[in-house]
Length: 110
Image 1 (tube, rainbow, N blue to C red):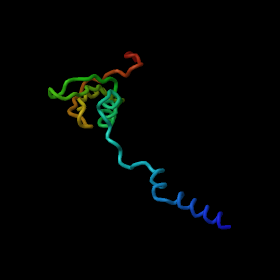
Image 2 (cartoon, one colour; image 1 turned 60 degrees about the horizontal axis):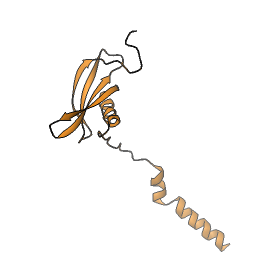
Image 3 (tube, rainbow, N blue to C red; image 1 turned 90 degrees about the vertical axis):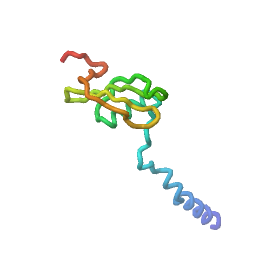
Image 4 (cartoon, rainbow, N blue to C red; image 1 turned 180 degrees about the vertical axis):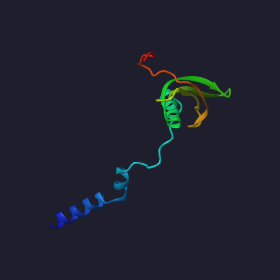
């Protein structure tokens, strides 16, 4: 009887410990994406504009730092975005409207 009571007490400590609850939950605040990679720059541009990133190329930004030029296709619109994403900070440096770039893998004629 002692063993089973001790085992149940130990098991209850493991199951109802605050760290056990925290381990199952994800952080509600989204983590800032990194713009060190092409995929990170595309992710930032897509979240800021609401479109689909088509291409990204690395550029020199402000002389010392790097940046990414990302072309974003906007569905159901005739104009897309050219976004400049800063590598040092997870946000857009600037953006401007351009003719909508075609999506990759699709023909340009419709």
